Image 1 (tube, one colour):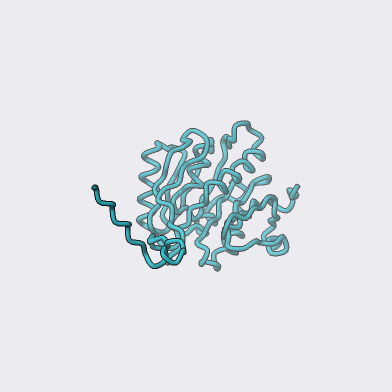
Image 2: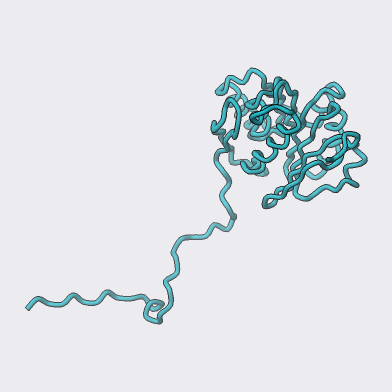
Length: 228
């Protein structure tokens, strides 16, 4: 007669009727950083941009950027999410996702300012890949770059400094407000929400706001323009 197969051995947890635990290791460093981000709309829609593994480098999440550019397009009064002819500065460019998104959507001039040499090289490579003639890449301090811009000349300023660099926020907001034209907008990304009382000394007021995880995303406008 054929012999019966021996029953498979079971772990002590299985014998006790307990579910077996997963052997998958858990990273002590939390969620893995994205290795790339994508341009959401415009000429270069779905183009992917590399994200360097750098401390403090925190690309604006896709969902937040999509919402931001919907807000901006509604102010531009153009269909299809476009920003035709806009002049913009991405003062702490990092991956360049914000400034390149603006250029993809029709901005006429976009300055990407970044201090880190490796990130500047990556931005130059992205500019070349996209043949982005409207984009200029500059290595330097974002606040200083805004202070050099002619007063009242920008349609949008993107402020997304490293969250730990809290001392940058006030001078950046002051410089951005001076450079902004009537009807222009400042995008501020921060680890907390800024109140209108805090923004008032810069002549700015909240227009739109959202929170996504640790990101507090603000769209600010000159207080004289109103917040409605």
